[in-house]
Length: 67
Length: 238
Image (cartoon, rainbow over all chains, first blue to last red):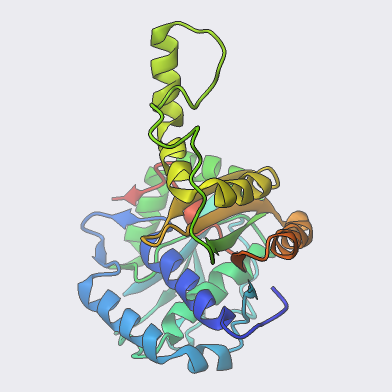
C-alpha cells in the first residue's frame, strides 16, 4: 500500500503481529527448536508496543486508514 | 540452527537482494518441486525491537514477486538442514497443492468498525441457524447440513451487524478466498486472498466504501504474504 495515514502505522503493526505470530505454515515435531514460544511472543509483543517508529524507519510501509 | 521463512514453488528462486534475520544470507533447501527459504545461524538472539518480525515479513513479501509463497510462522527454528529437507519431502504433495492455490495471490487485511452502535438486524437476531441460510423448501436433514456448513460464517456475520456484513460481502466477492472474524468490540477483522493484479481495484473498493459510509472506520493493510490462507493442513513434520 502506497499511502500512510496517521493511525495506519499502529494498524499495520497489529496486522503484522496477527499474521506472523498466529498464522502461517507450522513445522512441528522434534526437529523444531522453537516456534513463537511464550518468551518469544512476550519479547515480540513488548517490542511492538515500543517500536512503532523503529518499524517505520525500516521502511516497512504503511496501510491505509479511512476515518 | 536453521531459521525458516517460507516454502516456495521455485527451487531455484533468486534470493540475491533479500537478507534474513541478523543480516544473514538466505539459502534454499530443496525437496523435489519445492524449497524452503532459510537462514543459518550459530545462535539466535531475538531483537528486543520489532526488527525481526519485519525482517521475516520482508523476506516473505519479497518472495511474492518471484514465486508462490507459503509463509512459515515467525520464530520457526529447526535443528539442521537435513531436518528441513525431510519435513518438506514428507509433505511435498500437500505443499505443491497449496502453492498452486496461492500462486499469483497476496493477502489484504481489512479492519472495520462502526463509530455508531451496530444496527441490529431483526431478521438475523435470535433467528435459528438454518432459517437464515435460505428460504427454499428443503428437507430437515439438508437444512441441518447446510446450517452446519454456513453456521460459522453466519455466527460471525451475526456478530458483525448489518453494516459490517455488507462491507464484507462487498469485498469478499473481489477475492478468491476470505476469512472474517469479530474483535471483542464487535468490529470486523478480515483477510482477503486477492490476485496480485486486482490489488488496486480492491483498494479502490475499500476507498469507495469509506466514502459512502462515513460512519464506518476502515483500515486496509498489505499486500502481505498469504499467512492466513495456508490452512490446508500444510503442517510439515519429520
